[in-house]
Image (cartoon, rainbow, N blue to C red):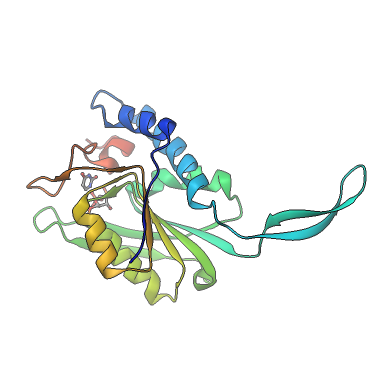
Amino acid sequence: MSTLHIVDHPLVTHKLSIMRNKKTGSKDFRELLDEIAMLMGYELTRDLPLEEVSIETPLCKMKAKMVAGRKLAIVPILRAGLGMVDGLRRLVPVAKVGHIGLYRDPATHKPVEYYCKLPTDVQERLVILVDPMLATGGSAVDALTKLKEHGCTNIRFMCLVAAPEGVKAVQEAHPDVDIYTAALDEKLNDHAYIVPGLGDAGDRIFGTL
Ligand code: PRP
Ligand code: URA
């Protein structure tokens, strides 16, 4: 079974609380999501292996430690996942970025795919799939299946707010994928929105409320 990592650093929790507030506007919401993505990325990459390389400081030669060969890919689920890409890219500027487009059908709450473009060597990379909201889990489960169809074997999923139902769905369908979230909320409502949640993440990021 995969591990659920709750990244509850005080700064992350504080920034998330501002995002949850309905009075917080689109600009602040976007900036906070970007900051949290970077802070969470720091935790998610904590176990990246290091290797020694020979360098020369102004004083002498030394064996310096650097992140070992493993390459990364960041894959946002469109639209809302886009808000987490730049924060992660600041940490790992050489990461490639793929995109998976899914929207939830308003009536069935099931994901509908409309786009997929991944780096050609994605299967050789550690893939960080990002989406702020893990609600029923349908979108994350389908996106993870898509990544595996492209040969990915090393995937982590990062979100901002998760519902217990979504965590269960991802863990059952993809027990090899660890989940990183800033908060585990109480439940879903009748419209499959996370409660207390923060509303519709895509609408709040892009101002389409
Ligand atoms: C939201 C969110 C996730 C999905 C989560 O996207 O960004 O992708 O819903 O719900 P689930 O876990 O029940 O699948 P939405 O479909 O609203 O599309 P958008 O990002 O384009 O607004
Ligand atoms: N998508 C969102 O943006 N918010 C939710 O609470 C659930 C799905």
